[in-house]
Image 1: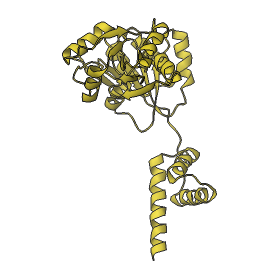
Image 2 (image 1 turned 180 degrees about the vertical axis):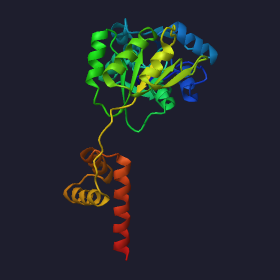
Image 3 (image 1 turned 120 degrees about the vertical axis):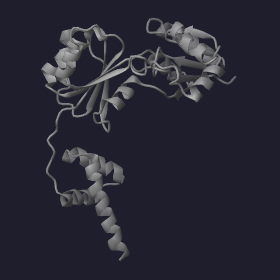
Image 4 (image 1 turned 60 degrees about the horizontal axis):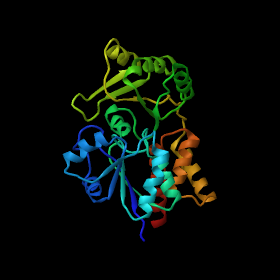
Length: 286
């Protein structure tokens, strides 16, 4: 008997129109939908005319329920798993279910879609070529401050989730430990009262202080300033030529290595390497 397939389906984080055609088709075609919250998922299914049976799978029953769902998969039933909103497993249940399915040789197929962290990053105005997502900040003040201290030197743009009730205190800790970084706070993304505030931590704290904050919160924080090395184009090209001679790595891998070694943006390294390669090609054809 052919085993079923487990589809990990991303769903809207707010606006019900933010769902792919493929996701709608999969949700209609599978034999069962496992949902973090069947009541919330029913609103989505009703909006798109989907009447597939549902069962619950949330953080409190994931370990126990996964076994019975995997039995269904092994019997040939295709199952889609959806979280409350966004992509399952990202600050939401799903990891254990997927892990157990893989361990039993079940085919797992991702059906990509919305992620609040990426949507907030898009709207932040902060660098997106290199970022790091940390999920929810620790809820206890001491643990939160300890964690923020641990990322003080992180040069990448950082993305966090936070509770609206802890937003101001979290921003105060960020300001106190990281200094006046550029920050963007997004609230209720894709929903009716969507809002993104940008500025320093102090600017945003003053905007929210004394107000009752509602909705899901995503905080985007600029990375630590990095002292750039003063390296000449000739030095970069010479180091590339040396690395290429001594290594079987691809040009891309060498550029990534040089970027880290020289503490310079990858794009800048690439520009000088490309100029060297073009000059080299021209000399060979002459």
